[in-house]
Length: 202
Image (cartoon, rainbow, N blue to C red; front, side, top):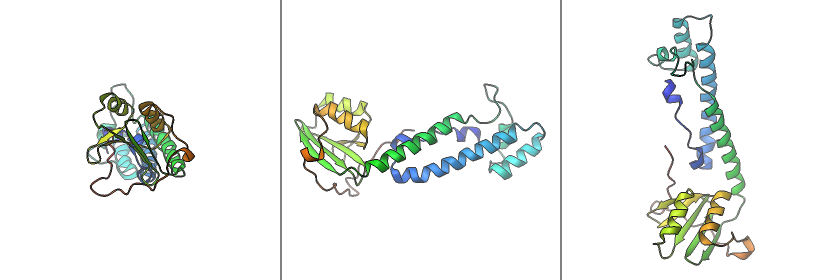
């Protein structure tokens, strides 16, 4: 694996709980490989051929990529920068903990002057339906606050969380209702045709 391949960011802000449970261990394994590769690359006792052999055998780096890792990057640094990966893993763990906490919040549906909000515990998403649908100012605010428009359901969708609830309160002009102040309803059943799709940042 090349140095560039290791630099692909983790889109932790848009990952579901199941995706995070899968992604975190793999990210930690990649991080361990990065550290091992750095130790090999910076070992003054080994020659280039030995380093390449160790990178291939111990770190599972492709033989065609290993020689390029022996060259310093543009900043003169040899090996991989690890700060971004530790930060990404930390953010993923924080998001996982937040999503676990969100599962204990019941589903809730409420209306406001200009639409309806569905907060689904089952799918971990908040959906905002605007009525009428053409409300440019509200739409711009939702998009700017991380919501994604779902054409099939004609609504704006975002993963659950305090930031999402705060954005909804700003758009609707009302405080987020307590469970006793709004009608609790079962989570909307999502089918293949109406499943909300959350865009993942590249």
